[in-house]
Length: 96
Image (cartoon, rainbow, N blue to C red; front, side, top):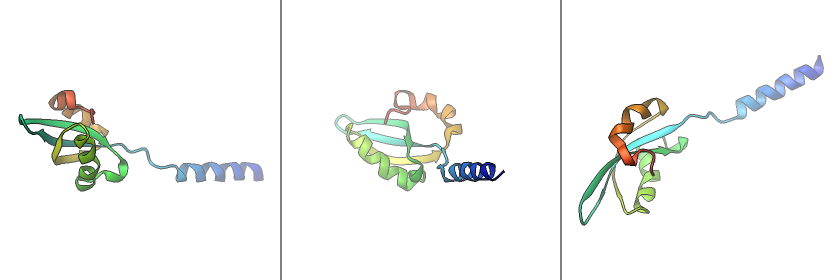
């Protein structure tokens, strides 16, 4: 009986300590100059950056490394919003 209690307590502790596996995504607008090119995209951001401001800080360097300037993060959302944005993002869906 005592062994079962210890196993149950240990299992419960592991489950509570495990981080939630929430997914966070941001849709954004970006540009390139000379010639001017604009795009709308969707990118996954870390769970800790699931606000518009924090997502901007994470996305700007990613986009800059590919020659794009982040204009703004439109919104942040969970996996339930991916389907409705995929067609609009086209080739920039989960690219950066």
